[in-house]
Each structure stands twice: as C-alpha cells, then as structure tokens.
Length: 473
Image (cartoon, rainbow, N blue to C red; front, side):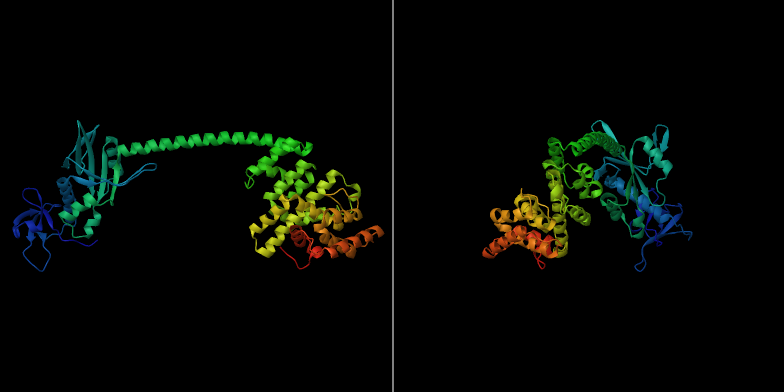
C-alpha cells in the first residue's frame, strides 16, 4: 500500500475538515485525527499536493486511515443513505438494496441486555410507532472480530460492515466516499440480520420438511415397488412353469410399458444375464410364450447379436429333427431361427451401415410385424435345416409342391435353398424329391419375376452363401 499524504484533519471545533478549507500554516489550528498532535497546513503552493504535516515533524502512519474512517462516518451521517450487502444465506438469497434513514448517530454507546457496544454508526428508521435500527461498522484496519460479532447477534439488531480499504488506494474525498457508501454493492457484508436470518431458517425448515417428505415417499414407493416386484416375480415364476395365457398378457404389458429401463425387473427375470438364449430355452413353448419372445425381440434386438454364436450352436441341434417335431419343439425351433435371423440383421447392419440403428429397427420391425414374411423365411430355410415349420407338409418333397401352389412368390428362393443343400449335403435326394425339384425349376424359369422383395432381402443378408453371395441390405 502506498503512503498517502494527510488531507483531512480535526479543527478546533472537533470537526473533520479538508486541507482546502483551512488557512495555510500553523494558523489552521488543526490536529491529527490519530495522535491529536498539532498540524501545519501546507496548501499555498502549486507544485506539491496540498496536505497536513505534524508540527513536530513526526510521522503518524495511521493518520490517513483514521481520517478515512471519520470521513466515512461523516458522509453517512450527512446522506443518511446506504447500500446494503447481498444476503447470501444457505437457503434464502436477497439482492442489495438502498435504504434511506431518518437519523444517523455516531459512536453511540448502546446497552442491550447487559451488553455494552459502541457501533461506528447507529441508523434509525421510524415506521409508525416503531423504530428500526441498523448498525454500521466502517472497516479500515481491523474487521469485526468473532466476540463482537457474537455480541451484536445477541442484541438482535441488524448490522453491516463496510470495507473502506479499497479507498486507501485512491485520492478519496467527501464525494467519492459518499458514493462508495451509498452506491457500491461490493465490499460489505452482513454481520447480523435477524429478519433475513429468520427467512433463511424458515426456508431451511421448509427444505428439511420437503426432504423428509420426499424420503418418506421414496421409502413408501420402495416398499410398494418391492412388494409389486415380489408379486410379479412370483407371477413370472408361475408362468414359466404353467405357461398361463393371462399371466403372459400381464408380462407382455409390463415389458411394453417401459422397455428401455436399464434396471427393468421383468426383463431381468426373463433374460438372465442379458442372454436372450436363456429365455428361448426356458420359456413355455406356446402361443403366449412366442408372443413374449417377439416383444423382447422388438426392444432388445442388440442382445440377440451378443449371443449369436450360442444361438447358432443350438440351432444346428435341430437340423434333421423333423421326425420328433412336436408343437413345443416347432416353437423352440422357430424362436431359435428368428433369433439367429435378427442377430444377423444387427451384425450385417453394423458392418454395412456403420451402426445405423434406424436400419436395425426398419428390417427387424419388418420381420417381426409381418407374420407372412417370417413364415416365408421359415419355408425357404426348411431345405437347409430339413425341419419344416409354418406349414403342415410332412417332408421337403411335399413342401416343394406346396410352394408352387401356395407361395409362388418365394419359389425362386426356395429353389436356391434346395440347390445349396443338394450341392453341400452328403445325402442324395430321393427320386420323388428330384422330380419335385425339376418341377419347381421349370416353374421358376417360366415365372422369373415372382419373388417377394422383403423376404429376399432378409434371406440374402442372413444367409448370403445360400441365397446371394454378393448381396446385402
């Protein structure tokens, strides 16, 4: 901090005066505001800044700070106006405001409940029959210490502290000090503010009550959630045993309600360790179980790709199993086959379209929502697996004739599957099958444009070596 010349002093009437308002020399009859020694006014020259000096020639370091303190008190007493600090409580905030008082008293000893204090300024506002006080402490050197702050708070009177130290770095005067006190929002703090502290406490209690009610509600919800989950878990367990249609509808509704919940209970019970294969192998093999499978597929298709190899291994076990096919076995084979097709769609879309999820949904929804597309895929894949579903045909020969009559739009695809199987299989086709195949080939040659586009795209993507080695979605 730079040393400043003393430009304010106390005159013989004990008033604070400026160097510009007194006679030059010893005749100024002024005294140092700090040590009370006589001063000489040096205000006649034009080269040096006007100032007071001690007659004895001594140096009084605290004189300027004391003068600033007195000048601030004087400015406040004259303007009777002040800018309060921002109130920044833990729960309540209030902006700074300008307050105009009716009376300002300086250095008045105040007694409150056996506590004696001497605030720098006591400002009062009269409202009706009541008087409201604000104490103001002007800080130049020492801040209000903890003991004094505690005593001020015990009195229940509002009090602020204004930090005047930034003014010491300037050539302050009456105007700049008055503006600093009345206009500046910074460099001031609340020492005590019972009114605002009360609001802060009220907000704190409101906050605590809201928090308590929220925690109570969360505990209640958690209990209900736990009870509902316990009941739902039992429902799922019973359904996995019985395959009851009504329970299946409830489970399907639960899945569709919030399918993408990361911690979704229903799905976690059905798809253990995020493996769709667990559901396929352990779910009831009836219409209701199949509907839930396709519901899971609609939302959790990415998990199908994660266990694609395991699904393929299970699927190979059902090749050539037409002889012991039951309705349950057919549903199991259908779910494995659909799971593999969905997994391949996801895999190929990742590779070809840079993880474009729109492409996932487009083709998977086409497959799931169009039952005829699924059945077409099952029929066309029957020669590869030698396992027939989606029709009542007993063997591939009968299915070949059935395709010509009932599904001519997939005849060319079905023929490709037969040709691929005949080329790569070690078994020889029967004479009846060879005749049926030739009949089919003739039909395809005579009807070259009879091909279902959606079925073709799906099969060419999932089984490219069979249906089109160079094709993709």
